[in-house]
Image (cartoon, rainbow, N blue to C red; front, side):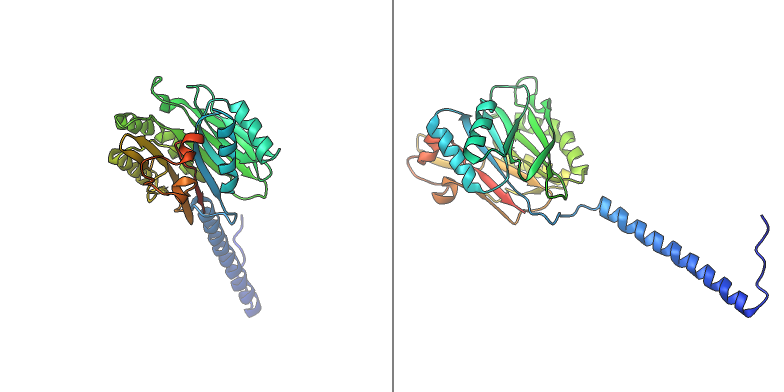
Length: 296
């Protein structure tokens, strides 16, 4: 290839300089544009669309008609389109009741396999569509625990997808070590979800009965770079003891960012964490857990 000829006039020199400057500016603009694109792809950001979710352990659903009516009454009052649920012993009945009591557009997906008590995600099909659902058996620990469920939902209005991971950890005050191991086994699953571009919420019945559990949850959130959204909740469930009814914070939520609002609803909100000699009627009729809802 022959070298470009040198300009022989002032006009030619001016045109050559202008051409070089255009190329330099073009390269600079390309570099800036590429940097902006990479930042948009790599940096977590909030979608313009608000996000509202809840978690609700509905004790051994369905026990009877009173429980069914009370549970769906509580769900309706939450006014959220995504609810992670635990202790569903008849997923088909739960899905049927959801459509009948909330509307035909509501959908339910539950984990596959494991003990009779299932976890699942109930969602408003008018606002979200199911991309996929995955059961994670890592938390079963050779039969000592229940599998987790990971669900990816697409907003019908467009925007960032929502990934929900529902857990139900081992119950009992003497099993903090088992719960710690369950979360350790699930951590690679959670880490993969964190690396996605989706809105992410990890929620459910962590059965966090004491300080050991709280330290485990805090450490997990720190390692994953998530906010422990429910850290400040005083109680999310009731424990009926010989010396009276005691509120305890068993249910928890982790998310990319701290929520604008989070609360334990139902009697945990209206009656409080120290109801006295007897637990609220909700405890007997619906569940020992209150629903917990959060909004971003």
